[in-house]
Length: 192
Image (cartoon, rainbow, N blue to C red; front, side, top):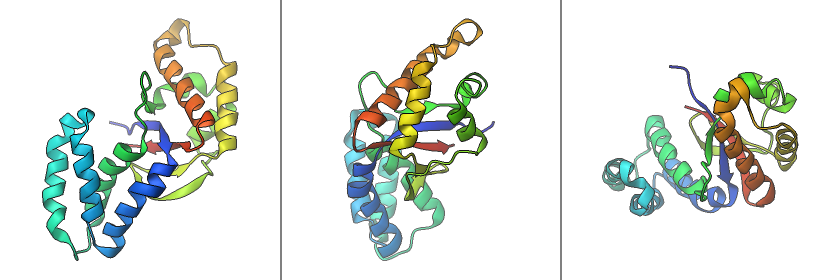
């Protein structure tokens, strides 16, 4: 099964103030206390019921590990829980993690920026995150978000053979609007 490519709404302030310091303390100082605190917070959230056992597993597993260096796999799994849980905003009526792979044949013909992003000609240049989830560590600049939003706003909603993309396209437009109007938000491209 090929990897899924997602564009995620990403809260840079939450990353800088909460997620990164906790992950850094665990990764660099071998102190899991802040990560455990974030996992406990995430486990209490109503949307985390399907991951409740995973949160508790990691709380139980890393809590006693103070002083021990976490493995790369442990850090990857912790990042895959903490970063989306803390840094991907949950907004009413909006899926903050949009699968964009399905847009490739349709949107690439209509947006040069999107085509370049998907074939590697355009790289998100807003900064490289110390910790990521999936393959994503690069965030978009404000200029890239505005350019992409402008291109998408000029393209009519998918119709005909592409009508099945209409709901996802509306969601993508919502992500671009939020990312371009909220000072703390950016976009992150990642694959799973």
